[in-house]
Image (cartoon, rainbow, N blue to C red; front, side, top):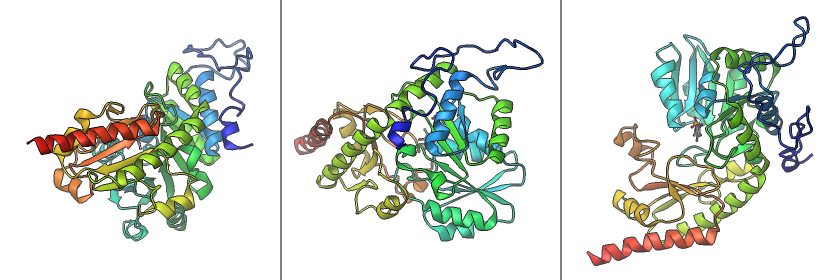
Amino acid sequence: MRFETKLLHNGNEIDPYTGAASIPMYQASTFHQFSIDQPGEFDYARSGNPTRKALEETIAQLEGGCKGFAFASGMAAISTVFLLFSRGDHLIVSQDVYGGTYRVLTKVFERMGIETSFVDTTDLEQVVQAIQPHTKAIYIETPSNPLLKVTDIRGIVNIAQAHGFRTIVDNTFLTPYFQRPFSLGVDIVIHSATKFIAGHSDVIAGLVVVKDEDLAEELSLLQNSFGAILGVHDAWLVLRGIKTLKARMELSTRSAEKVALWLQQHPGVERVYYTGLPSHEGHYLQDAQASGHGAVLSFDLGSKERVRQLLDHVKLPIVAVSLGAVESILSYPALMSHASMPPEVRQKHGITDGLLRLSVGLESADDLIEDLAQALESRLTIAVGK
Ligand SMILES: *Cc1c(COP(=O)(O)O)cnc(C)c1O
């Protein structure tokens, strides 16, 4: 069965108890045991709930993994995965990892004796250099945020397997529609389902899928023990979002390509970062390990003033943190996602004061381009008027 069919037919689309065409919200915290000698499948909803289970089985199938887990947020998913490690363990993590991941590693897990080296994982040599006697895992995000740097997943897996490390991929930006890390040998896949998987800017959720039974057992214990589970209503919203994943990813990606090409030729834009452009340094690697380039791109206007003028005049995209929704979202990394990074460090990593990130939604690409055009023009008018 092809992936897009699996989005709708994966064994979790019909309620086994009533035949309902949408898995109901089993809004129950506990379940009656008809016989204490033969406990039912569900007992207490932290350990398991039918609605959440349908979502967990769906994402496991879509990623091609062994077992899925749904959490209250992407960060709850990521943090629970880090609970696999113990005092004295060392992790190698992509340097431009999601800000919340950086924060939980440096402010929380470090205090508990788990050490992390942040390296440019697009350079495999640097990954090898960072290996220590107690290294236990390599954690990557590809493409990364906000410059869409591409890490060679197979290369990372080769290094990890040679040393017995686990590999973990945050697959939020591409989703299994475009990228299946398990097929490249990865052990654990994580999502902020808040983004493309749910897709409607109306839910915070996280998902984890593991490759094998051993990890499934470890993660089951952690999910039940730590308890950062996804609520029933939110699980239902994510299940509904998944049904349209193909349609949303296809359309947004096609529009993102169009917008990226248009931005690239605009005289007011200094640089465009989109893996779909052959000029992007990760373009060919991305083609080799994923089947598409996704709906997120970044572009540099050169200064904070020009960013301000664009944001003041743009009408269609909402100006906000987050990405991966039906509506386009413009973010300003310097003051939003990367505000906690010291300005020198930010600049050094290319996250300049002129950089904007655009997550392209389902609006007409032509309308988006016209809107960006008038916002960029208004800048020119103001400049001339001065
Ligand atoms: C948003 C995001 C997260 C965190 O997810 P939440 O659902 O906000 O907790 C993690 N990784 C990436 C790549 C993200 O974009």
